[in-house]
Image (tube, rainbow, N blue to C red):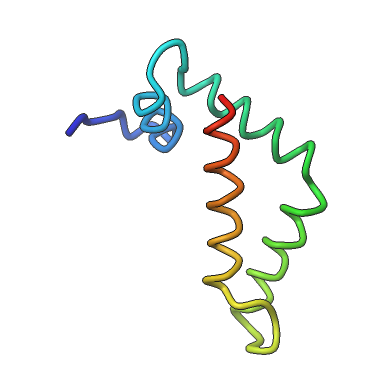
Length: 80
């Protein structure tokens, strides 16, 4: 187990450690942000429905949405 700083970048630091060099927390954050920007419609649809589902059972199931987001992130990390 490796500790990462609790500086607000811990997710990106952990991902960079898992991916190994030459990845850094900054490069992982930048790549994920670029992916989200390039795929804004899909990400926005999913996150909007995730927020709505907290107040309405008729909207997209939260676990389905989280699964979709995780698949997207894993796909992005595979391409790095």
